[in-house]
Image 1 (tube, rainbow, N blue to C red):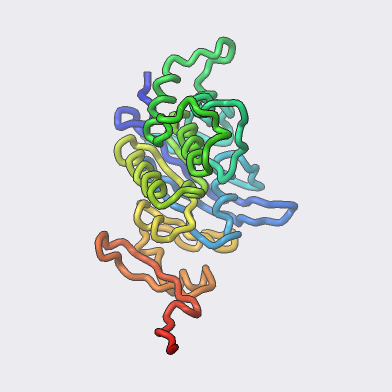
Image 2 (cartoon, rainbow, N blue to C red):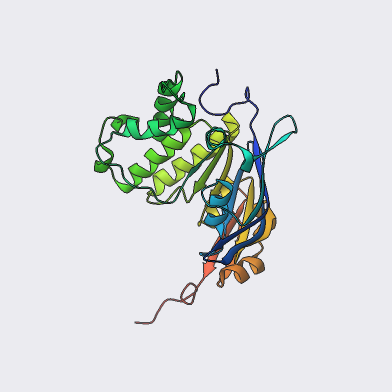
Length: 284
């Protein structure tokens, strides 16, 4: 029996992808990319729109078929498993992903939607899932959706629905959690709470997290590693302090970006400099 979510008593798995090339309509949009998701750590993918972040994440989640790829699950004992050779149910017991958008299922309660996450654990013929109820309840509690567990999802706000889908992923009880812009639709409070939860999943439960974030400051604050992409290629990877070079960020994003240590945490903090950023007070 395994407790819901990976834990120190169940050594977590990491994920490693190499030579990932993905094409749309015959045109390569991700070029021989490599991505390391160390076990029990938080890794964030950053980069401008169209840089290939989401496509790369979808490829390693087996939601987009890559033209070329070598993707392995790195086990705690030092062994590895070819992720592309695993059956879909077996892969889904190791890796789950929260995509940018999902349809809103009508006529279902929050609890029923979160229960979708248990599909890889149900037995084929009788649907038995002895640990499913506990996993669903805990996932709802962690994401703050338990108070409206019996409400229809069609009545929820965008932010509430986003947290329901995150709870669905947590209920799947995987070693690897992939998140594509998990703070979308969330106000400031819930953005912070989701990122705090991501940190706790890694620190307290050994979950391996890989996620796409647009906010550079959030990525620096929550991540053990950041991966910077530009035009479908990985151009830098490592600690935020190493990746957040102002000249490199300015070149990649096409706008002047100033970087300085945060006064409270010491992690890099960015500021974009537009035409009106440094304007002086106007004379009446």
